[in-house]
Each structure stands twice: as C-alpha cells, then as structure tokens.
Image (cartoon, rainbow, N blue to C red):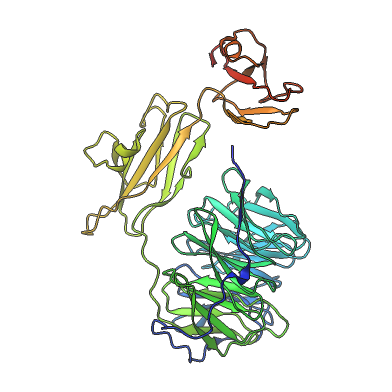
Length: 530
C-alpha cells in the first residue's frame, strides 16, 4: 500500500547567486546565435540522436524539421495543425507528439511525415505539456483548465489513467523519471506543489513543496538523480531536488523574472535556462550552483510567450525558440555518457506482485549484444554472482525473462511472501570492458497472510471510531477478523465468520485501553492462513 509523502523546501530567496561569470568550460558567451527560419517559433525538440530539430512556426502553421549540422530544412509537417504548447520525440525517434490548443494530442511519423494518431483530451483551453515514458509506450499530458494529469496508451490511443490530486485550475508541466517509475507534474498558482505519481499504481506518492508560484518547467539530469523545476514570478529561481530522497538540494536564484524553460546539458553538469522577457540565456554549473555565463542576442517574445530551450544529445548545440526563428548556439560540450548497464527494470525495483510468476523486462545498455541473467532470493548471492553461481539463469539476446511458470526458472511457481532479487549484466565479447555489471533489483510476491495493517501494529492515540483495514493475502477469498483487549484470547481464537471486505469497524473504543486484532485468510477449498 503506497504511502504519500510530503516534502518541504525553503523559499527561493535562500540562495542568491552572484552575477559574475565563472570559468566557462570553453563556451564562447560572446557569440551571436544562428537563426533557423523566421517569425514566432517558441516550441521545439531535438531528436534523441541530436541530428534533427523539430520546431513549431506560428506563422507557417507547420512543424519544420531541420538538419542541425547542415542547418537545412529536411521536412515539413503541416495540415490541420494549430498552435502547440509542447513538442516531444518518442525515445526511439520514430514519432513526434504535439500538444495542441484544440485539446488534441497529435502523433506524427517522422520518416513518413504524416499523422498516425490523435487523442482528444477533455481539457478546456489546450494541451500544455506532453511527455513520453522512457519505453515509449505511454504518453502523459496536462492541459489548461484541467487539473487532471492523463496517461495515454501510444499504441491504442486510449486514455489509461486520470491522475487526480492537483487543486488549482490546471495541472502544469509533466516529466517522467528516466527509469519510468515516477511521473512528476508541476502545479500552478495556489497549487504550487509538484506532485509525484507512481506510474504503475497510478497513485500519488509524494509532494515537493517549496515553490511560491507556478512551476513552468521540469527537467531531469541524465542520470535521473536530480530534478530541476523552474519557478514563477514569486520564485524567480530554479529549484534542484534529490529524486531518491525527494528533498530540495539547491536553488539557482537571483533572476529578474519567472524562469520559463530549463534544460540539462547531456553530461548533466550544466543547466541552461531562459527568463521571461529577457533577451539572454543563462548557463549554470549544477554542482557548484554558480552561474557560469550569459548568452546575449536572444530575441524574446514581446507578448510573453514561453521560449522553449533544449540541448542536442551530442552537446554541440543549444537551441532556443524566439520571436524571430529558432536560435542555435554552438557549445561543443561533452555528449551524453553511454549507458553501458541495463536500466528501466519492469517490474520496477521493490514492486509487490500479486501473482506467483513474473515477466522481467529491462532496457539494454548501448553496447550490449547479449545479457547474463541472475535471479535468486538472497541479495548477496545475486549481487556477487558469476556465471558459475546457482543463481545464473543463462545468457540471452532478448530483453525479457520469465520465471515461475513451467518450462522456465522456478517452474513450480514463485513462493508467496518471498523477496526475489535479479540482475542483468550486459555482454559484448568484442569490447574488452565487457561484461558490464548491472544493478540488483527486487520484487516481492504477495504473502498468503493478511499484511499492511491500518492502524499499524503498536500504533498509539488511535481514533476511538477507527476503521481497521489491511491488504489481503494472495488469492484470499474471505477474511476472518478477531478483536479484543486480551492478547491470548485474540491469538488463540478459532471461531469466527468470514467476510469479503478488507475493512472492519470494531465499534467505539475506550480511552487508555490496549486492543489486539488478527485477520485470518480463507482460501477456496477451505484452506487458510493465520
């Protein structure tokens, strides 16, 4: 059962950065940008390989595709298109998703340059933000006049979840964590919290509290450890959050107005940001939380439209939308570090499974040709395993592995109540650095007995009119509840009536008294679990 956590941050004026320029890693801050096209061009995205830039041109009513290296137009997507608040490439670069003011999400095939799908979102004034999950199978969206974050199946084009928790008029920007486990959504004024959602359970599992105003943009560091959030006029700052701990670790402040767009460099060391109304682009050192320099020559929107900013994945280019075409600064920064190890496990690390078999999936490392799979019920055994170990399950080219079914590992089924650990090493015999050892992930098979009681064992100051609840054991048909104020009586009880619900009202309790309760699970055929 998920527990929602709330995390508070200090206000944006905690850290005020000095305005002088620091050593700039060879970046020429005096350069003038190259412009691609003309007229208002505020929304853009780089392809995952960094070679193509997709840009919505308001005057053209079209998305133009640019070869970044040659700076030549290589495509034009047009036809029944309207103003776009968001453009994103799918992780494999095959699709483009557009969030449009007519409340639609359009999917276009990049190679064929044709629309291949459309979702109609029940927003009032347009889709503001869209994001692909790392595996490319799900789209998240938020819209103006709609405080619900929506998840869509990219294949079927159907809505698969509506995430409710924002209390303002609209939900803001959305971003998946790089491992795909969490989704973050920004808030608007009077609903400033950034909501944290578990993608699998569709439940809110946290809040990042600290912004004083609208969260205009969210960006993850490439390694997924840091989330940056761009704050509104009352913040004039970017907040940095530790994703694992979900707490604030920095503030990049001292700006003249609201920060509207942010982007991490491919190596995660720098953060570029654009401040509304300013004709400048700021570059910050993330670890030192110091401003490195400022690009001048930006042509900001005269009407206050948000100019999207983005790095190419090879680190060579920084692009920003503007009032007069797209601007390109040549930076020649380090590109993204290759992912040599597996990532993106499914089921997600720590998942509780409600079955006795599992299909394990992962995303392969960049250089992998095959994969060594390890599974066991002891963390150390799996962590330290080699191909000679009992937990080694074989080498394979597929990026999935089944356990708990006949013909596979653990053919008699996985054991209820047991935590299993698994690891996938990436193998490429042509590379002397192979194999690349993977992380150890885990999943737990739901136990046969009732668990996760509410109130918890040993709880104090319980409401006198409390309702008990619990999570059912795996496959339980009925639940027998025993309740009283004597431990031995409850522990030794054998008579009771089964019930189908996983809640129980014991009636008004008395002050100062200790109570005991027990739930036995009843299974089809008369079996049970105490």
